[in-house]
Amino acid sequence: MAMNSSGVSHIAVCVRDLDESLKFYRDILGMNVTVDRVQDTSTGGLPHVYAHDRSTRRQAILSYGDGAVPTLVMTSHPGDDADGGPIKLDQVGISHISFTVSDVKALADELISAGVELAGPMDGFTNANGEVSSIFVYDPDGILVQFDSGGG
Image (cartoon, rainbow, N blue to C red):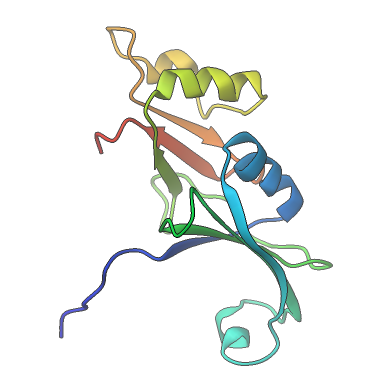
């Protein structure tokens, strides 16, 4: 049986402090928060997909524009510490989120000015012609976020 899908609906990321993550994704990157709610995670199928018992989660859904997909779903667990940590590109799991942007170098300059940490020196992302087609930065949890010019 082949899956019949129209595409990826959302990407979900658990974060330690949702307010800090919103400062990055909403305030610096300009994403729109379409939902910000607290949910009961003790019922339905949710307890079965958690590593630990959690009674609630705060969930924020972000996108670039009305109806845009995929959305970015960020969750935190108020009153509970998240465990685990971000991974690198050579580790099992979802290693990063990537956004296509029109001018990677200009965005890199803006992000650096806003205090965002690059995942390596700027010259490491710059080719021999002085062009920057892709950069990686760290979000507040140390999760890799890539910005590229759409070349893959």
